[in-house]
Each structure stands twice: as C-alpha cells, then as structure tokens.
Length: 386
Image (cartoon, rainbow, N blue to C red; front, top):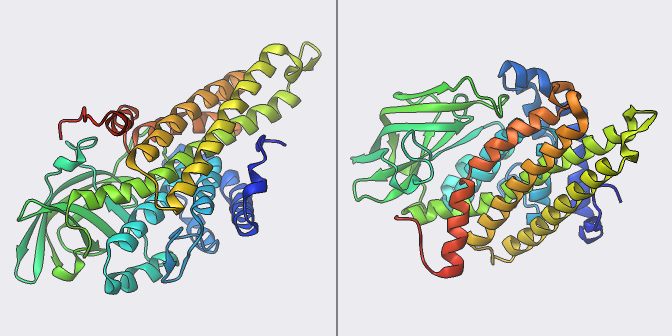
C-alpha cells in the first residue's frame, strides 16, 4: 500500500494516474538529483524549465489555448508531485500556472486569452502574479498600487513584494487600484519602461525560487492590458480560491516526501544491531505520520471534486490549506527526528522540506487568516475588519 494507504489510486482515472506518474518520474529523474545545489546557492534551475514545459501541464484545468484541460484532481496531483521533489520549483510552477495563467483564464477577454495563454502553456512566456505589497500581505484588499487612466493608457505606480518569477517573467499581472477605487488586474509585459524587479536575497526557505520586490514608476501600459473581468477585489479573491486548493495539495507533497524518506531510512538504518524501524517508538512515529498524511490526501481528493463541481467555497479552500500546511510541518518534524543527525543534511532532503514548509504555512494566506475565513463562513460573523 505504501503511501496510498486508503487506496485513493483506485478512484483515479487512467488519465489522472498517467499524469501523476509522468510528473513523478520527472521529479525523480530531473529535479531531486540537482535541486540541493541550486537551493544552497539561492539560484533558480532554469535548465529544468524546458523539461517542465515538455510535460504539458501548464494551465491545469484550462481548456483550449494549448492548455491540457486536466481534471481538478490531476491538477492537484501535479502540484503534489512537484512539491514532493522541491517546493521552490513547485512555486515557480504554481505562480505561473495556478496564479498567472488561471487569472488570464478566469478574468481575461477572449482576445486576451488568445494573446497570452498559448505562449504561457508552452512556457515560451513566463508569468508572475503581483498582489502582495510591503505593507499589505494579509490585508491585500488594502493595496496601494495605483492605476491612473490617461487616454488610451494606464500609468501604474507602487511597490510589490514577494512576487515569484517577476525578475524574469514575460507577463506580470499587477493588481492595482484604479481612479474609481476599484481593484483590477493589469498586465505588464517584459521590457516596459518604469518596471523594476529586484530579487530578494537571504531567504531561509524556498531558496531556489526567485521572489522579487517590484518598483513601478509611471509604468505605461495600453488600456487593452487591463484584464476585462478584473473589476473588483472579489475577482482577485476568486483566483486565490482557485489556487488555494492547489497549495493544499502542495502541502501533501511535502508530507509525502517526509514520510517516504523517513520510512526508507528507518528500514535501512541499523542501531544496536537491528533496523530502527523495529523499535516501538519509531513505528509509533511512522504510524502517526501516515495517519496524518492519509487524512490530508482524502481531504484534498474531496476538495478537488468540489472544485470541479463549482461547489468550492472560500472556507473549504482555507480549511484544507490551513490543515494540510500545519500537518505537513508536523510530519516533517517527525521525519527529521527519525533521521537523527543526518536529518539536518541537505543530502537527505528532509531539512530542505522542513524549512520550505514554513513558507507554505504563511503564503496564500497565513494559518491565522485561513482560520478567520473559515470562522466567518461557519458563524456568519467576520472577525476581519475589512
């Protein structure tokens, strides 16, 4: 049974299994063997981008425009398997596919979809998603970046922070407040004057993906670069809900890596004359890790079904992200403990996952904010001021 203790594989379609296995093979053969060095040097593995493109998974559930039109379950499985290999590279994928492409797919006009999605599906165009600002993370609805209409153009001014891929992206979606006070999505294309993205250094998590601080100084873009369906922050929230279920799957990938590594290590590592897997304390840890992992898998499977049926609510997505990120953190802590001193060595991969999960706990909404979104939905009372 391995890591699929409740046989969820039996519920997958042949296509979903094939997609999962294809991405798993890519992760095992291409990502894991090289990622530690990139992670240690804070360098992005550009060599892997064309290999990822060949998997034909960009765009997830989007149909047409060169996108694969995968099921919601398959889309989640892709994120899980990439995260099982490395969270940094999965973040590159998630920002491009689950955020930037999903935004264009959900909120773009037909012309805008035709203009950008085919190139993004091939990874000829790389996307980024600029929402967070230095002073506005959890309260992103209060963003201060402005979009001033000037004839047939908009002038963008402001600052964004923690924006993955932005330093080399071809298409950056900037969320800004227009002259009427409404929040909209504005596409800034590579080379536009006034746009500056500086890579943030000194991270202790997700070191192999480049997040940037963006400065926008009178960035002039044509009116047709405003996404047609992005007129209020509610539209932004729709994109975040759609991407949040993929982050819940990402957390499963981290937990899966920790459990697989710990189980294999416990069977091979000998102390006091026998494998440490034979000791009751270790078996208890492994059992509890598997219990948490299995509950995370079941939750995500149902979550994806709800997404496919258009029944997913903000609270449902937040509950899964909150639960799975915290459970993954616990599983990785146990995995590091089982590995003993070797657990802090990059060669064993657990330490990288353990620090990377800290970013997952925080981004796409912190643990506390997710709980308040769920609380608002189950009580009908908002504890958030805005």
